[in-house]
Image (cartoon, rainbow, N blue to C red; front, top):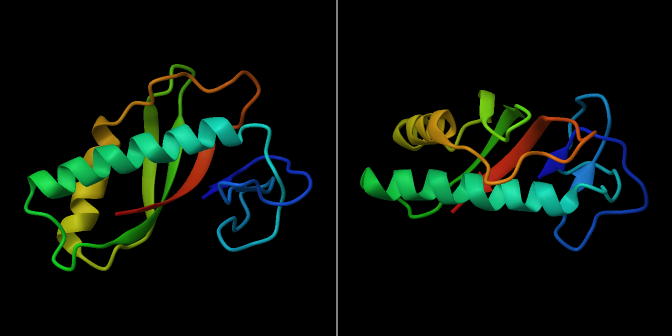
Length: 124
């Protein structure tokens, strides 16, 4: 999971990286973000929404999936833009991801000053 923000040091204990400028974040170097607590919450909430929807639509054929999405949050924590960057490999799961992101809202607004464009790796 990555956050489009300035980073320092190395990845935190959750494996989050930060790198300013909308560069590739997943699997790249970077640093610990002051917003790691929030990005962790976003990942948990988005994964829960996606996994609940995938399960309600019959589940994933091999019971596991991974995908990468880009989301943009508004000041209230609602997802106002989303894009599938890396497919799960299953059209139905990708559709469920898109539907879940349309409906998802984060339980807390982003912290003041935090960049709101995020790349997330979501999985079962």
